[in-house]
Length: 193
Image (cartoon, rainbow, N blue to C red):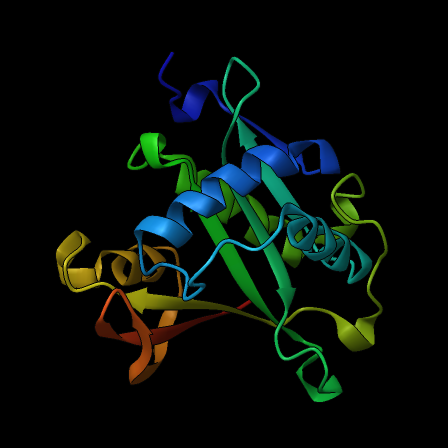
């Protein structure tokens, strides 16, 4: 059955979902410039990423269809987390199963992620540790590759984020090289407070 926004369930991620997330991610590594990864990392690396997100007190959400298959996921991770002054800033990741794009899954995942980041105390099932007021999330960044061969000449994703309240704040030219071409990135930001 083709999932629609009304038949999806959004749940906190757990390690049991990692194999399906891995398959989605692998598709984008091998076939697109959405990620600048050139090879798919071992599945254990995704497990470590998941655990890192959880240890930071940040959300990791999956979208399931009626057959309990993962059709999308989103999470927030600390931006340049080695530098403590960035503690109020996170970078989001959002991916949909390639057979289930343009079906309303992305907006649901994005809205849920923002809702949790704005009021984490209301979503204890998604947050393994509460962040203090001193490291409360203020800014959410979306860093996107511009695939000029893609949706709206690569700017469809930018328009998606702008539609959801993000503002474009940066444009880096030809900073990635994949599939024998140079790729730009754009930075978009949403302030939560």
